[in-house]
Image (cartoon, rainbow over all chains, first blue to last red; front, side):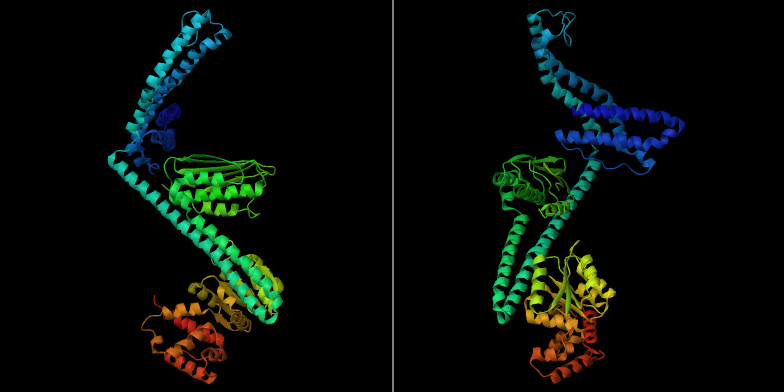
Length: 390
Length: 218
């Protein structure tokens, strides 16, 4: 299916290539060479991503060379041009067959169920040439449907492989290029992981400094004030001491949050899905959880995802008045996508101190994105996108 | 004494105000970010401003920048900067405008109320209050061959107290000696370090701190 999609794109790219090649004769097309090759590159990029999903990863060669000369000489550009031509023709034809085979099968198998609704006197669906008059004829069509089905099951995987072959052959960078691309990619992801690590340390430092430490300082100030009060006005000391105790409790709560936020132990024990299902199970409102994350992300990213869901569910319980919540977590290539939705009365914002500001800070520390929609009357939906760092 | 407070942590802000009011001092305004602080300084014309270093929006050195700006706008304003940790670079930024009417203390010093009030009054009266931690950092980081080697232990203690901004009487009290003895130590220190002696406390602080900075290991 996806192969047909990229084949259509390749067809488009091929057509624009032809147009540009023709206009090149008059000179005008030269201006468009780069843009057209860009179209080819992004089409090839889609095919690489598609093939990487179904088999061994094909590394993306990155952006096109800058100047026209090396652009025209670039071996990868040549291979991509070859692929566009192949894929636009054979990939397209294979894709069409791949589409019609199961359609024919479905149509013919179900034909006995709806043959009375159509006039079958001048032939049936697909390659059925005999006239169709009664149930028997229709059942015969149904039998051909089974034949189509067998063909579909037998040939579709082969066709998919044949369709992918041109891409696997032409879009894979040659050995040493592939290796250097892989090194570059590894260096980039490693740098991203280190950045994420530094961001995490900064976040912890800040929450210890601006939260816990400040509250302890407040306790200290209040105790100092209480001691002064004891000498002069003992009656007021009790009230000040009570404040000091409140501040101590807040400091402890803050410390607990910080420690839990550093790395929830459950994450290491049971992975993201297990940890999240624990959260969903303990949520104050019934929570439906869907996790589709193959493999594991960087542990700090998982910790952030866990924190986001934990905070969001706390908000849902405390503020939304919702009767149920839905949490969806899935991975789209190198991004981890979280979606938390409730059926509450909405109206959540970042100013009212519901912890959304904290969520945003933490997400943005990872170059992630947070989109909150919460119209008055609800529902509230929070979408968070995090780079996986792996 | 009229005071304006800039501190973003509500508990500490209210705690400070409570403490100062209990001491009979006038807290004209409490603010939580640099811009409202500067506005309050314009409006209430306080004698002293107490400023936290880390404030919104970035929670880095907003307080230092705001303190420097407030001092620029109203040179007669005394500023006491409070910080969760001391950073010598911050002290240097603050001292660029002179040490008079300036304090830079660790937040936890506020808990020792008598000492805190003493530092507050000193700053309000045109003096200086530099946290012992900052002075300690400066003293321990000096090169082994600096002039400090020539000082006796007693003289080093006096030097540290001078750098904190204490006057002769306060130094004498802290070290349980007479003012005359302190005076003698100070003369000896200035001679050994080749500094021009001065009786004005703030000039003395600047001289000592500059000296210590110049002697720092790089």
